[in-house]
Image (tube, rainbow, N blue to C red):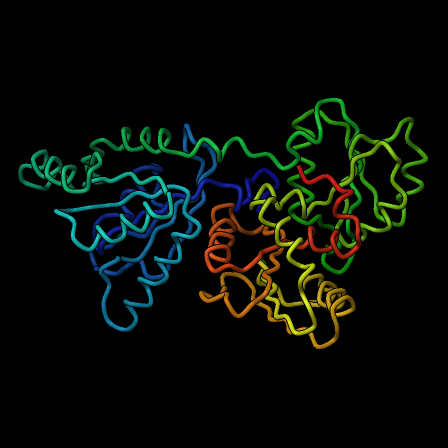
Length: 396
């Protein structure tokens, strides 16, 4: 990824859903004006979901998700359909691609509506359908929403489809910021950066890069240091920083050293609000008061990297939890897209900062946990709680 690229997790995710040979891939190519999706007359060409990043005029950086046909059959076909179903958890905006009167599509439309995902219904291949406008009217009436006739082959209404995507894009997606009201133009912000085994030589981890970019866009004054240079950095300043953003793992050290008037938070706590629901995570921290050595915890990491010796999720947090609650504490781990459907065996779910997931994906996991009555928390909130300073750090 180049330094100019917007990370996939920060892009609006647009999923195209429909039967095999509905023309989903062709519509992506028509929208982008490029052959970025594989097109074939053979049914089932698209198997696993395919993610294509693109800069769409009027929307900016987006990810198109090209999915397998929802009418795929056979043992492998059912697995492909399940993969498409999982895509809904990360979909910000859906295009339901129809080629006739819907049948199987109706269940998917209801699922999208239940998840409060904006849906744009289109009748593709309208150039080859007899009396397409009458069919559009019948479908619109049956699904109780407008249907746009389009043709990827001729370009009919492709521009209008693009405009409809712009109109339906959730306003809240563009309003989110990492630092919120904690930092304004002219504020001095000190970043205490992790330089451990999780930060490879010569690179900054993604939350650091995104936070720095946002602060620079806000016209803040940005200074960075590592934890071992914190006191020297503070002494070199003409006045205390308005805000200190730290790696959660050194919360206690930074809290002891910070000037009295400086606000303190962490990258992980900021991303708890940017990528998820900070209030849900704070409620999860409060639920930790009731945990015992007999409790069972699930730790979920968005990254699929192999765990390292000093891994925060696999090593450091479990060690701190067992030190507080007892060595018999049961802890399970999942990585990447793996996440149990049934969370009821757990007393708490602890999620990472989710820099590799989009917000819709994290919120879907939070909603799943809440629906099953399981508290959910986040790495940074947990570490502040275990350090006894959660009530002293800024969360918004």
